[in-house]
Image (tube, rainbow, N blue to C red):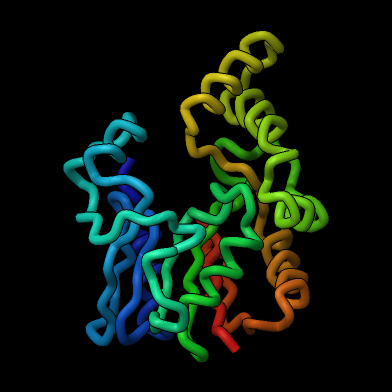
Length: 229
């Protein structure tokens, strides 16, 4: 489904307040963030547009933005440290097995004073409603081992609750198929208050490398803007 116009308007409003210079947007697919005239972005994804169309068969690849750089958006190995004025990653961190590690790398890639723009889904809206909120202690454990020890449990939870399936055998079948394929699920789940707590606790965990400059629940999603210290 196309991104609702209200979502685009909200993202554009917040982007206009904080973003300028040159940056990147990770995983924009068919919904790039509208940028103010003072900002320019290159588009980064783990796969080419052709491969993205095969991975996300429910979407029309003809609507995807051109992928300028094929790179792992959690690591961004093709970008020099402190080389970006801003980084946008909408509805991405919930797909990361190690969101704290991804944030650490994102902070490294933006210049001091640069911005991270994150829009997040709220658990109360959409297919994550039945899933438990991810505890901060859980993401710390995932940061320590890269998510290895919790990967299968996440896939089982996704198969059961996101697909509304109660049969254990079918849940296991879907989870194993997604694991083999490397399908990008929501590994972690937050609502607005849980995400705010995550930001507060992750600031301390990441040694105060950022400050939160904007936090908003729009009624549809959560938008937060972090400034690198």
